[in-house]
Image (tube, rainbow, N blue to C red):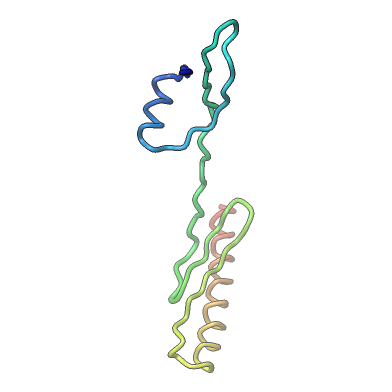
Length: 106
């Protein structure tokens, strides 16, 4: 016994391309044919973070909800130098935020 499934051409092409398609399948009214309807979902729009300042070993960025500070310091500097670099970078990040706020206020 063979069953036929009615699929839109656009959905069929996506399936042939190996893409995943969300949807629902149901039996057509007064027919033995199955019908597949893909969900029309909006693509998620990702808002990129705005760079405030590049630091020597990282960056300071602003997103809609957060201020992000990233640091990546090489281990081979040794603990005392790493601590000094951290203090210096934090001061620089604080100054960058103050400068950024002044620029935004203008």
